[in-house]
Length: 134
Image (cartoon, rainbow, N blue to C red; front, side, top):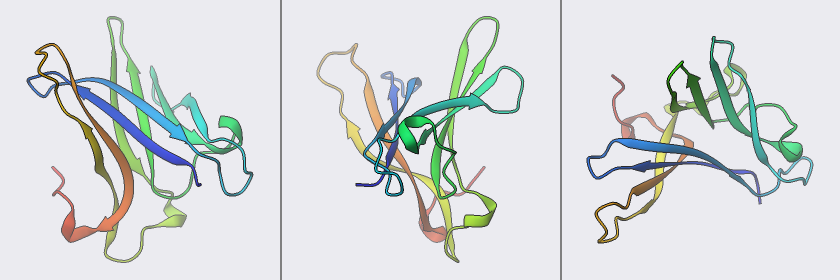
């Protein structure tokens, strides 16, 4: 099984994101070792990025369409966001772009304090099937 990469985003009842978690599972095709989370500086001040890397999390950032979870640290808090990224040399096929796709959801239980979670994966998708960018 190839390296499976997802980001889990939990929300409150008002649909505000609460937490972000990068989930890495499976083994990489090239080294047959587990794919694990790797955190590195992003190149911007007070910001790090996480991605799923081969070789037990010691490998390089993937070149194909993949999730990158960013953490921005301020004096008072941490903010998180994720993007779908692809290396310039590995573009999606013609007419497609690398975007986040919701693949699973955890519904709210009857408990009003519980959260809802969406799981996203990044994929090359036909441009006419994606949301317009802001």
